[in-house]
Image 1 (cartoon, rainbow, N blue to C red):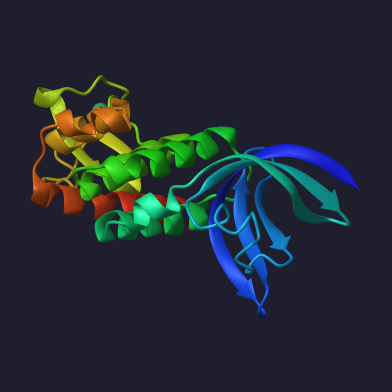
Image 2 (tube, helix red, strand yellow):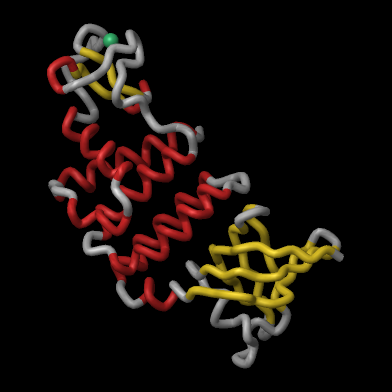
Length: 232
Ligand SMILES: [Zn+2]
């Protein structure tokens, strides 16, 4: 039997029979794990309010025969209630979890911290589409697959407005006017500037960004495709 201290984000809570719960968590040190909570559905169970989707907690865990159990919860932050109070933020949180679940395969402390911040700031977001785009950009960066925006992927020339040729997702980077063979582009120069700005902007400062709403839906879809294409 091993005791370990770790931080967790609850990804899913499933009822087992009438009394027990099985939760899936992302642990800061161990990554994705299942935890079985005997009697977890019983109202008096002290873990019940803590182990809801999107919540963060810090706990002493027991590892026994490759299974993980909670010994005690030291600290917790209830985001489930805050996120679920507003439909927009709930749907956004679900989309974020879906992406995270699909593409996060290893333990990664930086991705853990991003998820913790993401669910913490989401209930305060004024524009959930913008918030979602910001998440995608930050997540793509931490996955190590951030596209090369600033330099031409063929000749390495620095890209600025005048010499920008095109950007296609399949290329994973910009091409300068000399190297781009196409008259079309998937992202405009303005899109690229916007994405770079989003990357640098903290969640708490997002409202300061100027944006075009139509563009946001388009960018979300493209960034989702970008993520997908890197994991095929
Ligand atoms: Zn070039």
